[in-house]
Amino acid sequence: MSTFQPGLEYALSLDQNDILAAYRNQFHIPKDAAGNDLIYLTGNSLGLQPKTTKAYINQELEDWANLGVEGHTEAKNPWLHYHEFLTKSMAKIVGAKPIEVVVMNTLTANLHFMMVSFYKPTAKRYKILIEADAFPSDKYAVESQLRHHGYDDKEGLILWKPSKENELASYNDLEHILNTQGHEIALVMIGGVNYYTGQFFDLKRIATLAHKQGCMVGFDCAHGAGNVHLNLHDSGADFAVWCTYKYLNSGPGSLAGCFVHERHAHNPALNRFTGWWSHNKDTRFNMRDEFDVLPGAEGWQLSNPPILSMAAIKASLDIFNNAGMDALVNKSRQLTAYFEYLIEQLNNKNIKIITPKNPDERGCQLSIQVKNANKSLFQKLTAAGVISDWREPDVIRCAPVPLYNSFKDVYLMVEKLKSVLND
Ligand SMILES: *Cc1c(COP(=O)(O)O)cnc(C)c1O
Image (cartoon, rainbow, N blue to C red):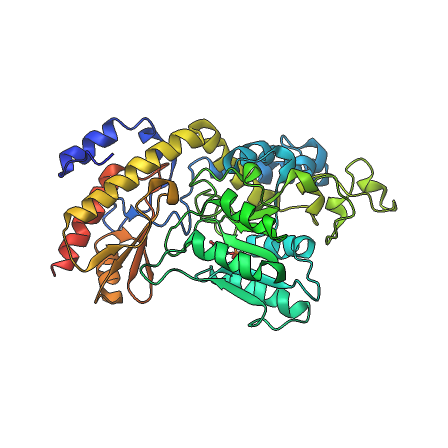
């Protein structure tokens, strides 16, 4: 793939040949004070707003204004069923069957609700394994689950640490942990794409190794959903969770996704926290029936959901449906490989990309370590119009997103990095 060339003209020619180039115009691109597009490389933190989002939300505001409570059944998109309008598209994005997917709650909340069902500690098997550099919220969540069940959160937590040579986690290490301590581990909970290094784990390999030792398996796919082919069903994971405000462009704090593998879909005996939205739709409003749980992931819902947030999700998923994950992943691989090529062209001994080189082991994000740098480097980049993300002590995370980032964006980013480094 590394047949790239230097120079702006080459970047522009890549944009010209990009079959997804027109999608950029479907998004609001933040601008600097002079009105120029900023180079927005933080779609891994908060995705940009589709221009259609406002109309989708306005539709629900209008139906609410005109119909009041009747909107539950009479709105153009009846609110009672709104989450169902999202299921098919979301299932396609994460590689799942519709019965395995539901949009509900927020991410860390879903993680807890999944652990209510899939973290079932016993005296002999109560530990939780996570990756050492897990996203803080995930680490706090699993620690609090350990404490909730009466275990020590240090003793009960096993960390899958990166190998000494680099920042990446190795499957041999994981296998060793599982072979030696697997009988004590109740749950393996890994971030599908690591938020810090950008390493995309082989979900099926992890799930197979963990299941062999009798552990339950869950993935937090916040950095994977809409970014890589997750193939959740085939991975065999018991559950997965993800948010919709990163690569899925559904707005700050928007609702989250949840996957429960089909093999658990028809097991009402599986313990869970419930509410009226987990109850059989046909008898939900009789209000006095014995509890009758819905099959599939829907059976984990609690509340009637915030429709305005779901409307923003629908606006975004409709764009994903049009573009298609295959085309997005194809462009993403080219865009990120080009980014990598340009950074390597800088020939700067202080710069090291800690994200895996293998395109199968990463999504669009590159994590760029700049030795001897401090936050002022990042601040200068920001002043130069590059919106990226700084992680102490010395890592800049950049995510060129195939829906709205261009090859020109990537080219300009590296040009600005070069001039800031030479400052
Ligand atoms: C973004 C992210 C979160 C954030 O959790 P919220 O509950 O949405 O605030 C948690 N975990 C991971 C892995 C993330 O990437």
